[in-house]
Length: 102
Image (cartoon, rainbow, N blue to C red; front, side, top):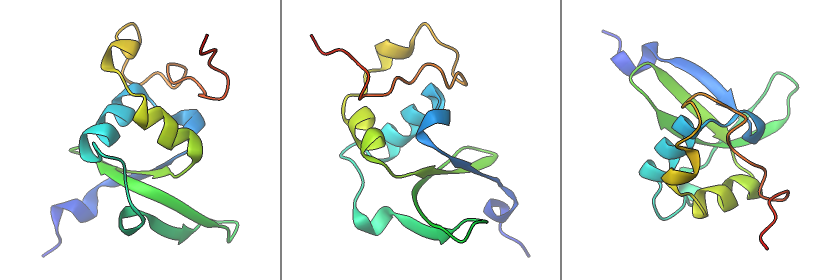
């Protein structure tokens, strides 16, 4: 008998494709950030090693690529910053390197 989790759609997400919904799930799952033990390493189709953290919805397992931008964005997460965006809008998440902090 197969586990229900085995039937989940699997999606690899780069920071550029991160949505408010996935970011909220990440912050909920890793409220204090993530550690080395939570990082999954695998090779992509180009035989490059990818490091990612996992978050799961009812039908999808997301593997979100680890980056300094992800760490910064998770640390500065405020749900109110995304209230004017659709949950699945990848344009909502701003590159932390481009945000003017003045």
